Length: 138
Image (tube, rainbow, N blue to C red; front, side):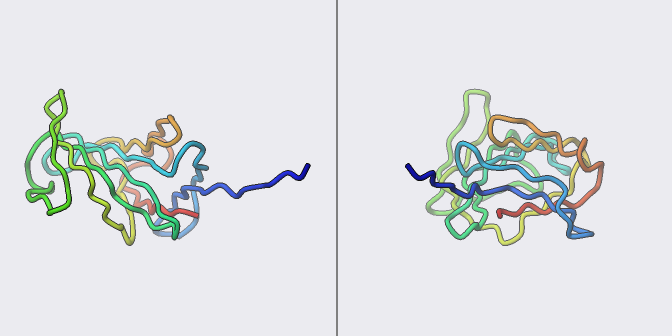
């Protein structure tokens, strides 16, 4: 019986200054991940949910907000859905927005927490504060 090897997709975190990979995570269960942080202007928690398509484009598919204010969405596009969580959060789903370049400035106000494969990775501990990190799918 032949063994078929499959190549797993990886989330690669790259230092935007040096363009060198710093951390790599293999997708084990599905093709999604999220990043949670406190917004630098309105000081409330935001969780952004991403997946990737068959061309390895990163797609924003859902965002959870806990407060209105500067720097967060003020309008819902036609195909997007708005609902409310039991905790008072505002959940925007069905976004399906391609992100050409996903970059976070890590730990400016608070830690950025990457969630992938049921793990939580505190990006500030890996990269330090005020470091620009690019997310790519390989």
